Image 1 (cartoon, rainbow, N blue to C red):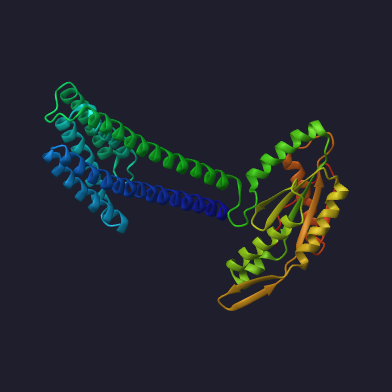
Image 2: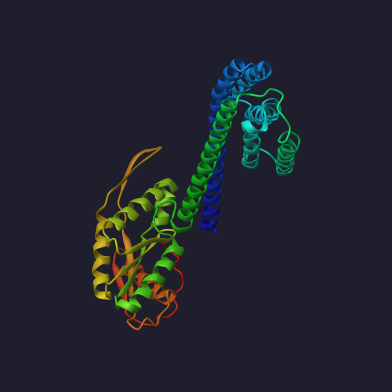
Length: 379
C-alpha cells in the first residue's frame, strides 16, 4: 500500500510539473508573439502613413500600444489573461479593419485565422468559454470572407505594395504557426518521454522497476529460445533495513538505497538487468550466466556492498555507516519450463535461508519446485 501511494504521488507530481511547463511555454509563446507584433505594427504605421492611409496608421499606433502593454504584463507575469485578451482583440480587430480598408488581397485575414489555434491551446480558459471563443473567431473569419473578399477596398494601394503586404503577412502567419506547432510538438514528445520514464524506472534509485524487469525477462527468455543463453536471477535484500530507518530516519534509508543501487550497478555488465523489486529488495537478471557463475557474481556484489562506507548529512550531523546484504540465487532451467514467478520464488526461498543462516551471505537454490515459504517478518 505504501509503495502504491508513493507511486501515485510520484505520477501526480510529474503530471503537475508537465502542466506547469506547458503553461510557461504558452505564455513564452504569447510574449514572443507580442514582441513580434510590436515590431510588425510599428512598421505598418510607417507603411500606411507613407501610402496615405492615415486612418490605418493611427489604428496601428493603437496596436503598438496594445502589444507593448501585453509584452510588459507577460514579461512581469502580471495579469497574463489581460495580456492574452489584448493580443487576441488586436489580431481580430486589426484583421477586420485592415481587410476592409486596404483589401482582402493584402492578407491581413491570415492573422484572424491564426487566432483560432491560439484560442484552442490557451491554457487558462474553461472549456465552455474556449468553445465559445473558437466558434466566435471562426464565425468572424467566415463573415469577413463573405463581406470583404469580393468588394473593393476603401483605399486602393499600389499593386506592388499589395503583393508585398500579402506575402509578408503570409510569411509572418506561417512562421508563428510553425513556431507554435513545433513548441507543442516538443512538449508532447517530452511528456511522452517522462511518462515512459515514470512507467519503467524507480524514482529514488533510477533503476528499472518491477514492471520493466518483467518485460526484460520476457525479452531475454525469448532470446534464450534462439540462442540457448543461460539466465539466472539474484534476489538481494538489505539486512536490518527497518532498523536503519527507525534509528536514522527515512532520508538516511533513502540514501542507503541509492548507495546500494549504485554499488550493484557499477559491478554488473551492461547486458545484465538490475531493478528495484520493492522496498529494500533488488533483483538482478544475469544474461548468459549459469547458476555457478551467478553465485560467484552474487558473492562479489555482497562483498562490494559490505565494503562501501555510506556518508550522508543529517540534521544531527554527518553519518557514516555500512550495510550488508543477503542474496538468493536461482537459475532458469535450460528447457525454459518455468515462468518468472517460479524462478523468483526459488531465489526468494534461497534468500530466506540466508536470512535464517545469519544474513550477509549468498545462498543458492537448485530445487525446481521449492516449498512455499512464509514472507520474511524481518529485514
